[in-house]
Length: 431
Image 1 (cartoon, rainbow, N blue to C red):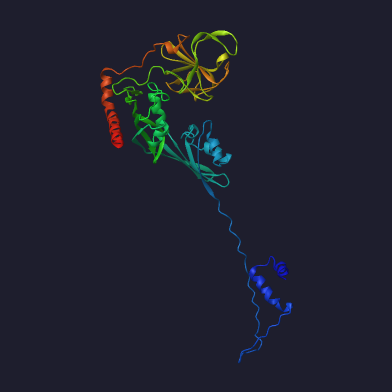
Image 2 (cartoon, helix red, strand yellow; image 1 turned 90 degrees about the horizontal axis):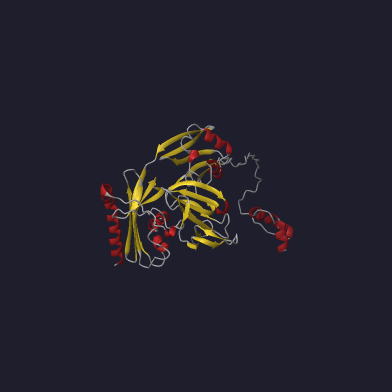
């Protein structure tokens, strides 16, 4: 009976199911007795029929939704690529670019890493767009089927920050613990790489201090940090660097007594690499199976490792050249030049005629051309003739002298005082 009742009432709402169960009782042989109270009026009650029209409540059509989108340009992106990722349809992209003043405001000249913020409708319609360009905030808003443009200067503020730390197990752990931003850490290590080999020279209890400037727009850090002064103490010996801008506006780092921190030529075009084949006039070539001169230095490195130019100069060649594979040649001051072969690819903007500065990435390690494995073939040339860079007495960078040195000492005093303060604070904290 229980199973039968379940199948009979299945699919009926609970309240309806209860009413049906009461009306069905006599059908199952059950009898009930009812009594009537005294003085009850038992005459029939007149019945009235009421008709009420019920209009079903239909759900209202949903209002068009807009979505707040943020995206940024990656390397190789166009503005159109970013807008499509944000959901903007092609018709609005074309209308936006055609809007008077938008191109002039810098929309099509944005660089990798720059951010766009906008509101986009369900149908792909662009409602608003905002981006920063040349110290201004550009805002675009929809007006009918087109767009209106508004630009406002953005207030930029600078903050000078100081960090210090001590090496215990790992330099990178110490930098993280001191909350040194990654960009500052990389630049600080580059500054001292001419004097220190951070793979072999580092010791526990070495310590560092850095003073740097950050630029903020609307409370958000923008651009690259700039180191104003830095110190690294290795085995008790202090190495210091102070930024100085000369009368021509060129910025360089010097020691506190005015000696240039940057050498005229870097010791190596690669960080943390080892020499696998040196400069020699007779070497067995593993691919050609002959004895021939090897007028360069081979550095072992993984594919994609960054290759840096060893000095300022101009690119005189960037392309494929026989056994060198992908090759970059940089002409430096005077008769000096350097060559970088077997590259996997070229650095940003590297082409014949482009200017480069010391330490700039000009390519990436590969194994193009006649190479048995990934490595960099590096040559140093004087008047076009390969020389052994490890055996040369290369010129040193220009030192500050006379009135310029006095000007430097005056300008740098504030930053060396900050380093002294950081060192004293660190020692007091340790004690």
